[in-house]
Image (cartoon, rainbow, N blue to C red; front, side, top):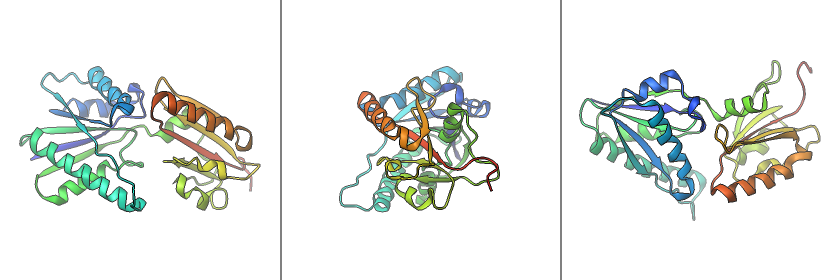
Length: 256
């Protein structure tokens, strides 16, 4: 049977890789590196750097593959994502059929951690459901953007004894500040924090976490939101892409 490794590689710093991840990559016959066009070439470059730095197995090889682009026109969000995942599953199926022989192992290098706002696991399950190729798979955890954000800002994630909500930009208005005192916001292409009107809210924002281009800004939301918006726009124009995340918080430790 063929075997697949879904390996979390952290958020862009090659030193984020765990010993477990390095050992896993060195068991793979084939290392799959996704490409997303020239604008996001740096993401593939970081993966190549990880392979060249840590993989010592002489007979392993790298196979790069183009990730299908998500089509959004005239589609609901869930419909467009479902179709996108189906297209990626087809690409994965081809890789497993054409690039691996029986008994071999392939590894997908996944940004951050495969369990957190990443769909590699569910896409691999789609491939299994097709029943065109028999394989088993394992998941290796990685450092998440949430961990990297908290570390860069030197903050604990939660207030003492209080919960943390992880959400998306499109759902932020449902959670903060009405339901949660601490919200981690991912996948926010619309900068939903600009709509939060709370004088007591603080924000801890970061982009390109773990890379040489890392940017972090923190402060009272009302004071720094425009700075974040400006820095984000400038960085995206400069690099052609952006990955960012932020934590919103109000209240303090030991408040009842």
